[in-house]
Length: 171
Image (cartoon, rainbow, N blue to C red; front, side, top):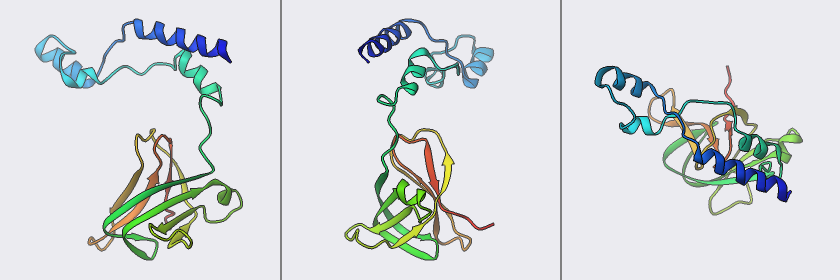
């Protein structure tokens, strides 16, 4: 374990010392019209996609450095305007909970509780697994309901996760 950690640190230092090429559509346009590039703010944040580095591969292979998400995750959400979740209208503070054990047993894995009463869920449902980019913070995605007056819950995602949980839709 210590050897692997030292190897990761050494590889990281070597990667930081190597120059990284910058490329973005805005840089290409700017270079064609103005000449110089990479002094624009858009260029500083864009890098070419490459294969995973040695460090990234080592981190993804080691379960101690890249642990599985907890069985039960929760996030506080505050619906400042009415939000439709299934057939219920929610407004105010709530706690969204996702439980992998319930999901494995075939039970509704997502429960939404009133913030001040976590004994009985207000809403519970089977979520739909969605792949997303890693979230920097807890996120709730809403969309306009068919009536145009209210929002509906579409999906939620916990901070640090690449999996989102969608509200099931009937097609």
